[in-house]
Length: 246
Image (cartoon, rainbow, N blue to C red; front, side, top):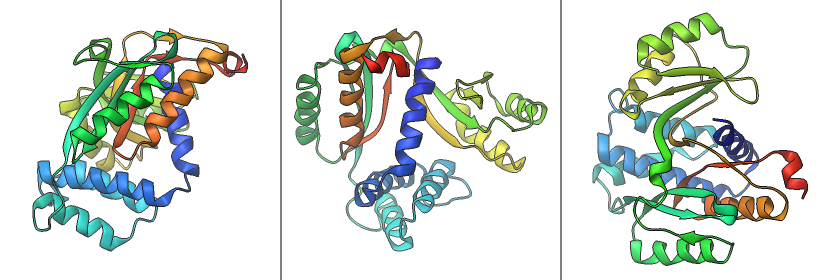
């Protein structure tokens, strides 16, 4: 999980310093719309929606924006016609990349994604060209000082399939996607607050690249992550600070 942990860390730090508030709110609004569309507007029963709203509140998204997004998802307002699409491709050095996208227009998004890949040393692939290299998992991260015994007890009872120390010293808990909501609820009931929680795609193995190739690969990942329709980016890239020094 080292490669994923590195990129997850980059994403987490990036989110903390992201001053492009309008773009961030747009991304979070889409997540709220889809969560409400799939599971309804009741926060007590729709944990995915509750998490999306918590994420929005954490970056000071206005209450009115949040409420409008929920209503778009439930059909009370227009503008909820979003679909989830997975784009797959290869980046510099043969690293595999997956982009989870929410779009209201595939005909616009697909060529934009293709251009981003091709102009930055990669190529957009076909369905399952790289997805088979990843396992879809729920990932929940906790601070290093979290009580190990309590964390382990709640995690195993809640349906986790793995608990381990991450590269940064914190705890990484993984679970099948279908157990994600129940596991989050179990941690909440136990008053264990995660630093990050998401359903993501973890690479089965990682690919190491160095120097200019590593820098180009990171640039492609950043550009994909900045695209308005992209909700998350997964990769099997594994790099260190030394390899970026190229």
